[in-house]
Image: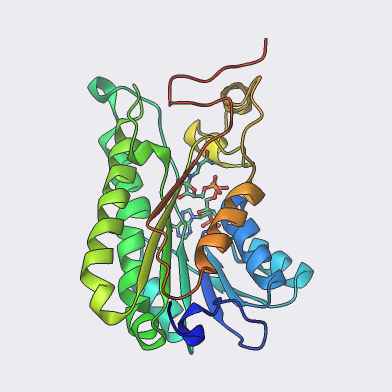
Length: 258
Ligand SMILES: NC(=O)c1ccc[n+]([C@@H]2O[C@H](COP(=O)([O-])OP(=O)(O)OC[C@H]3O[C@@H](n4cnc5c(N)ncnc54)[C@H](OP(=O)(O)O)[C@@H]3O)[C@@H](O)[C@H]2O)c1
């Protein structure tokens, strides 16, 4: 039996804890920032669109907006410089930019996907690592089932999210002696307003077709899991949670209502 001290949950309301959430201007990141703030965390909500973050901060106490472009090392460093302490980094900024077969893939789109999903995550972790180590903090990455399953046309995004899955395991190995916790939440199909629209360059009909006949996950479902992962007792490291809609058993196997 561990002493009580080590079994304490990490979201005690008496302690104000600080979380940085990247990609917080929409979808999963925004929902996670809101849920953390509701649970008493001080939340730095970061993304490129400052107006969206300011709206979020105006609507919810405990959220501070911070402009961030994870593809720019000066921007991730400015984020770190603006943060006095960091107990939790939710490394969530990312997205898919195509659904093209490898034979026709636009290499620039793949490079952009790698930059935001993989290198952006690394830049965010590197910049905040001193604060995270000082706090014996926690990095929770938003991966994807695309980090574990492959599908035609997914090449650039699937490869990037496979890299995220690898980095989660590598960071776990490298930071265990510094007292950090490292986790990945890997969702399947989540109906967020922008994810598929971004993938299909604003084509609303193509985006809607992704979710047709499916009770897809919503951003709040994943926020709920991220916050659960982040609020286990300190001695518990949740390595990986995969979350899918009931109707999605694999990338290809989605049972749609007619
Ligand atoms: N929706 C799904 O089905 C699904 C499934 C599995 C995994 N995921 C992953 O979950 C995460 C969130 O996805 P979502 O569905 O919530 O998508 P979303 O609504 O499109 O949100 C993406 C977020 O990332 C931010 N972002 C993009 N590029 C950025 C950059 N260079 N610097 C900083 N922030 C940047 C966006 O904000 P700005 O544009 O304001 O910068 C936005 O806040 C992503 O990593 C995605 O790959 C999504």
